[in-house]
Length: 148
Image (cartoon, rainbow, N blue to C red):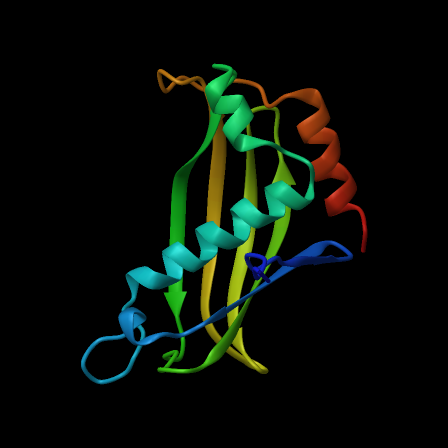
């Protein structure tokens, strides 16, 4: 039996690209994407980026090491995504700190920018306190950031 693989994004220099399609469940009655779905798409893209960088979030959580948590986000909606649109999420890491990083994400349909996000993600202990990111994870982010 043939089984399809889940969708994967790609790293292109210092940006990560992740494709999504707008399904009926993503839209309101007018066929326009409900605003909160951009947050879900951006989260999926960031999770895929971590996977491609060799960062095992599940293992970090299960071992008690910690987890990434969104601490700040600013969304700017420019154009609506509509039913059946193919959308690409572009993610860039713009600043890397000891316990957090800032990212810029863009949802595009072709050349049209639909939504932009400026955000900060922090690494925290499982009881919610800030914690330094593992050194090898910071090194992976640094390599990704320097691939321009």
